[in-house]
Image (cartoon, rainbow, N blue to C red; front, side):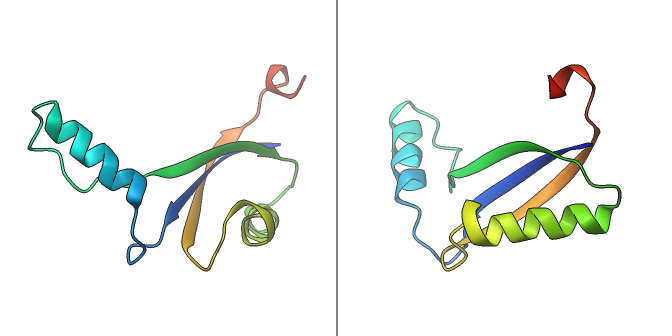
Length: 89
């Protein structure tokens, strides 16, 4: 069983209103050197598959059918390693 970290963000050409609001708030706090904030989601999951290819198939299918709106969002993931017994309880 592998731990997966899945990142979902708006595509670069899509206006990120949350990110813009945060950028303005950060500037109001005096941090003018911080710009172009983009907001996204991070999902953590475990996948019980034997190969990286099988994991890829599961994560891709779920991302495209459930987790991400692929019209406006993009996703990528990282395999973090083996899940411990304790994490699966």
